[in-house]
Image 1 (cartoon, rainbow, N blue to C red):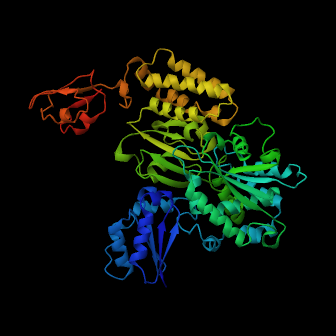
Image 2: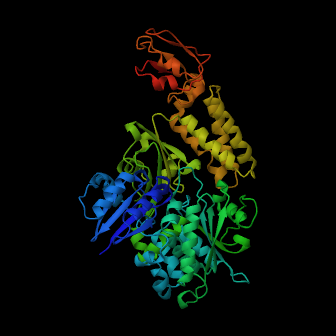
Image 3: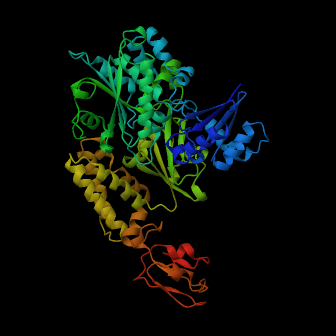
Length: 585
């Protein structure tokens, strides 16, 4: 039996050097009975590049592979002394991977995303070859209802209800309805949909095919952000292969089902994650939300009945139809069924993708899978739901992950981004950062969103620059509520969430900034003051030599002094001082 070598080449793996690693392996194993293939991201981005070696049915996983590791792997594969153990995956990381419940990510990091046969070998397209001959469209929708699958784009709206509404919509004269995939993943720190597109694009195609069968739609569109070139490339390959095998096109596999699929690359506007703005963009217009009703299920793309779900939602559907809605419903909580994929980023030791059952706690994810806080600093908060979400503080770390429980904290599930923050994070500046993002991404259609977010950003900027004043906190709160009430779409309605939650849980930091002109996290430069502790200073002169503006004076072996008028608060003096004499206040 030949040896099979799998190189993880998702965007994260490639960024870490996986393409070079694959080339070195191919060169070093040339002429040997080995096959080297590509896979997507398995989720352990912090361990990339990752190489799996499968021999005689046994698999060894090597992580953080570099040129030296490649040389050792080649020796091991060639039957020489195995000295590659030092690069094998730590048991804890391997255990964490296998503790996850992977449905949407089931094939990611395992199969070659550009080989349809590998997808088929894992029951891919089985729902098309078998189940649609046995189940009616109504039964497919019924299985989704039993499953309780909520839309994974953020709102958690029942998928079956949207599909039912699109199916029940009158068929236009030309017979056209649309299946649309929202792959415009715009949240900072979110990359769940990208991982599926890069690692298992056929799962998306099969999910959209099932939707097409259920609602009677002959055409589909995947709206994917242009910043995902690898995802687009692999999806194009998958569509072409599906067409060649008869899974896309007219009279699929000899049935009455006909379905064509194309890709539309979006320009990366965050607001186009809202379904009506996405439709406007598809039609060649500026991406701006429309009033609802009518909903897309009645009048969507080109005023035709349309169903819109995101990548993760569609990727769950084939598993549900193969295994039954009850199997999916058995996981999760009463109001949030199944699993959810999260992207762990920020001050976390083990950043990447995880898929866990609904009902797990934030602690389970951050400490159980994510390994805890980088450099063992204190956990302070986690931002959930992207820039439209909220900050959940450390004392709520045991909060259960489901739609209702998270909403009660002021945050939202969102598409699944988790930005982890430690003790060095300034929560006022964090709120300013996210509001800056949503302010820039506002389409400008609503006055409340266009002008209100700008006013909030101005106030937050003043506060972080030491110019906050009495009444700013109350003004921010009032503006936030008005923006939420007066905005047309979800962007404006949720944009104030980071501000509202940080005021709710970290009001003391706002008060310190405004009344004491102090940033407790020591991140807001205008509020910092650098001094030198004369008792600790040895007069080594290193700080004065490294200061870029000559703000530090003193003689050899005598205590130095920082001129506050010259100091630009770059922090270089504190960075180079070996005696911890520089004090930041």
